[in-house]
Amino acid sequence: MTIARWISFAAPCALAAALSACSPAPGSEGGEAETINRLNATVDNLSSELDGLKAFKTALDTPATDAGPAVYFVNLKDGDTVKSPVRVIFGLTGMGIAPAGIEKENTGHHHLLIDTQLSEEEMQYAIPNDAQHKHFGGGQTETVLDLPPGQHTLQLMLGDKNHELFDPPIMSDLITITVE
Image 1 (cartoon, rainbow, N blue to C red):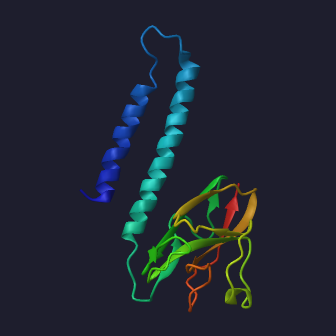
Image 2: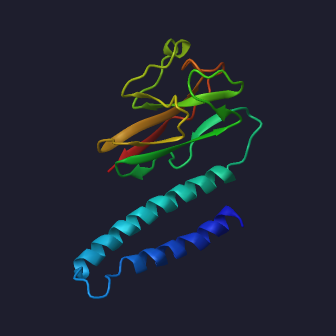
Image 3: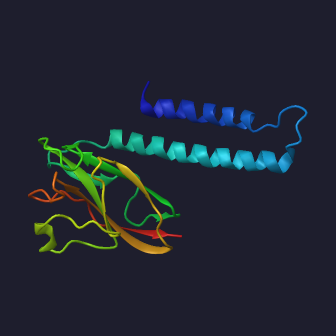
């Protein structure tokens, strides 16, 4: 079964199960308001899970290129308007992921730059680790950001075992998102 077919099958089944779980038990005094609250929470959870499945499908459908390794945002694109907290899923083609400090050929780990860019000089050294330069040295492939309303720039960079950029650097396009 293909991922797209699985998603189209699983989503309605999960919704049906959620709806039946939100019905008050016979003889209980949950009331309509409690049922609606539970249903809303279930729909929010299902929406989040469906977003994750769609992002996974997008990653699987992203064609490989001969252009070399590349990092990209799986679930965000330039110009998107989102709500905080913002889920950010990292994509990588042409290489693998390994935690910082691990020497393994053709691997690196993600760094996320928020509202900043590295200068040519900064690109010669290890990527800083602060609020604007997030390290994912454990090999993480996604994060959730609590961003204030307004416009924000995001850029992914792949670092080696020492948090240094590869030569040539492996980085995504700089994207701008608007947080409502």
